[in-house]
Image 1 (cartoon, rainbow, N blue to C red):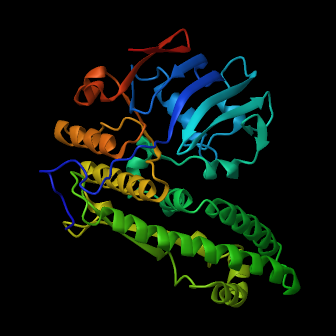
Image 2 (cartoon, rainbow, N blue to C red; image 1 turned 60 degrees about the vertical axis):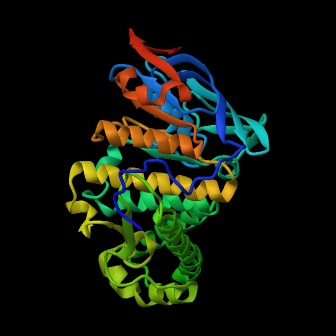
Length: 384
């Protein structure tokens, strides 16, 4: 049964697991506000508390780098460097995965792009998807349901990437081909020969993106269905901002060919997975997420993150690392306690931030705590 079930906060479907996915250490050098920080860790949830601006979110951003992409802030390598020195930065961590462990390092010399090393060997970012799963929920996502479709697509694609590591490569291939096609459209190139190869690449990658998104929604729906949780289930639907999304590669290639005249007039591509949107409904009430209260919207997001984590744990035998920035915002004490119970039941190393230690009292000794302070523009981290 779906809906709001407050009586049993712990997930009945969660199975005990002997293996875990977690960081055993994290070291930062000249990263954002942290000139130097070193954390020794175990697999328990991580509670980071301290005043606003102390550097708590910067620690979460460092952990987000262990997932493919640009991190939870989507920042460039130059933006991450500590100011005013701008000497470059480094993040290293001992990543424990089911059955093995790896030393992962991220470095960026002054003005240079980020470089990834796994066990001291240079590796592409896509290799991270085969090692770790990292999910996050940050305050900027609180407006997910009421702002533009781009943010919802990004949210859906992060979930898809967690299930299908090749989803990131398909997205990059699609975006590159679409940029080239849009350039032809803006230049009013009408020779069909210039379009065929690009449209074939877009159709191949775009159909994979669409299929991954649909399979992801099925996985999330199944992970929410029947779960006894204090957070309401969200019914999700993939829609197009205009028209219908072709269901396979051949149909998408044909649709791109047929749309050339219209696209030439618009100067951009008007058909494909980049025109998708994610529609959410508070399932128990039948109310669109965009029309729900602020607290309900937050609870729906938490429900989806937990469902994503639950489904991944079933896949890989260990819960993903969770990053929950200011997670207590818009949650009452009862729901906050229920969230902690679910995190512990999952066995997830959840990194959570808050302004004071009292926000994490319900965790007791089930969490490790760090006090984050800032003096003269330099963040310091102290284990409690």
